[in-house]
Image 1: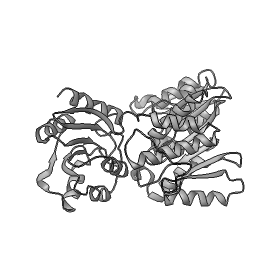
Image 2: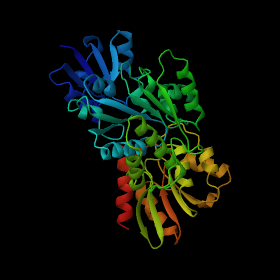
Image 3: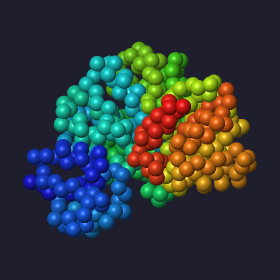
Image 4: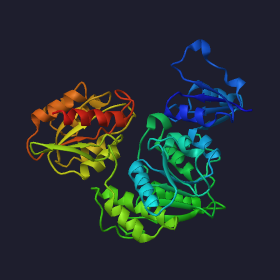
Amino acid sequence: MKKILIVGAGKSGLSVEKLLQGKAETFLWDDKMPEAEKPSVKDFDEVVMSPGIALTHPMALDAVKYGKKLSGELEVAYENCKGQFIAITGTNGKTTTTSLVGEIFKAAGLDTRVVGNIGLPVSDEALGASENTKMITEVSSFQLETVSDFHAHISAILNITPDHLNRHGSFENYARVKSIVTLNQTSNDYFIYNLEDPECVKIADELKQRESSPKLIGFSSKKNLPFEIKEIKIPGDHNIQNALAAAAICECAGIDKEIVIKTIASFGGVEHRMEFVRELDGVKYINDSKGTNPDSSIKAIEASGRGIILIAGGYEKNSDYTELIKSFNGKVEYILSLGVTGPRFAKRAAELGFAPSNIISCKDMKECVNKAREISRPGNTVLLSPASASWDMYKSFEERGNDFKELVNSL
């Protein structure tokens, strides 16, 4: 029986441990555990890294050093799953598109599991899947780093803009990691990509040179591809792009166009992504905690009206906030900054001409919400769209969003 070391005792690590029960001898290690119990990588056949742990971790480096197989939760789940994978990645829009695709597949009567970076580890659903199961999988760059055999029948890249540069080192490397979603695809498979995103087009052009390239299917709002979306509930041009990507995926899966159109028209969006919380005294409160990078927050601002009170800041990912601040276009009245990146965000805003008197530093979310209540007037929108990850103050963007909602609903 193989001996497998699982590094990281979070949701993914625990899920892999459960999946491999009876299939391998496993040892779960987390850096929070006593140093005296730390295992040696040399004693194992394979090392499975949780996606939240970088490949610069000593155990990952030892795996390479000693010639051990280095993989991740997605790879292990794939190896133990009979289902067919539809893998969706991109800098922004992954969760919305994955959720929408899942709803359309379910509406078409298909055996569907919505898994991955969306919150449910693939390993949780792997063993229960049959050959007819469709694994609608949101895939992050962190998960793609450890892929070797993973094979998606349909893969999609929605867009690629700078993100997680502290992990991947450069934008070029980040884009390269995203392209791994097409690994192992053949002429029997499909690659869905954004015709309006230069990095996506570059990946498609590179695939054309491959000996066995998947079928290339582009989507575009400018060209109404794969078809025009006339009715959609969720606001913003970016959500039209997400809907078009979902439509392209579903067409490749052979789902009837009428089912696709009807489901898109009724889809209400996902939690923590431009989620309406409440309106109080003429002020709207919007939870966009999923806005974990500048490009995502730009889309949130574009989808909002004027008079925005923006709550921004969080974990440091070395993002450049210049384009985000330039996108304000007079729509943002106040910035409430918090977290590790809050001061840097505020400083850059002031440098680009945003009134320093309208930048308020807050120590936590409670102070942000209370201050927003104090300075707001009818017609304002209080928008939590941090343009930063949550890990400095919260375990996840979900926890951050829930905190915001609880505080707003208690006003």
